[in-house]
Length: 312
Image 1 (tube, rainbow, N blue to C red):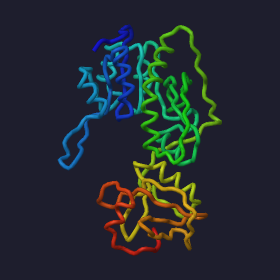
Image 2 (tube, rainbow, N blue to C red; image 1 turned 135 degrees about the horizontal axis):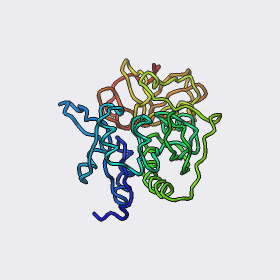
Image 3 (cartoon, one colour; image 1 turned 135 degrees about the vertical axis):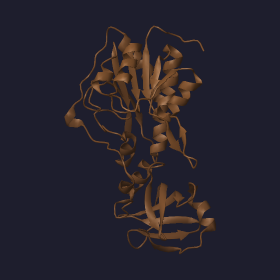
Image 4 (cartoon, rainbow, N blue to C red; image 1 turned 180 degrees about the horizontal axis):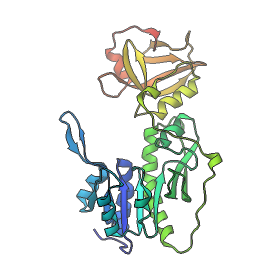
């Protein structure tokens, strides 16, 4: 591969698949001195150690890999100092201590999955959908001590399409992030750019979401329940209790049908309807306990339970 511009020393820090398109774009344009990612973790039935998607890309392309247990380790900091990076790019990684991000000669920047200062935190994509936002985007900003509060470099806005899930929004933003990464690096290397401080009064939280947070409350209005379902799809996934088992609900749509009480369900003509606080939803896709994701129409072909009742 021919690197277009190798005048910058760049370190890339990231972990999940969301980071990879940006890493690829940066590597192909500038080269990457090293990637920093999480230690390998046991996965699957055999519990074999497996590297992150960022590590896999680095191996395939012969990029040096650093996997510190602690980002404050003196040996890790010494390795960063040895590289003497001009820019540190952080996308979907851990919180960096000042003694690490301050080692960038030009700047260390992060790309965050929201239009900061809205949705500061670990799950901005999920919360934007859960809250029924019509617009979101990406923000690149200079790292500083307090998480997600640094001065803004660039923003990229996109619409959240009707009935879009968090997974679909994640994939759309993932593609856009690569272009924003390149534009941010070009901005930082120029002698003429401005940053913009965030207005803390406009900030909103986007905390990490746990399983207990994902229980569906069918008493809420149907639009809110639908947004909740889509905002948690496909992971960590909204869930309910049906026939004594946990069922993850991945997609729903509006319907004019009415049922008696909130949480009541009805199976009719191969479709599943559930009553919310002000109206009814048709449940389109689920993950039954111990089974794969599937359309409700597929699941109902082998269903032998009650045709109506109450969900937990």
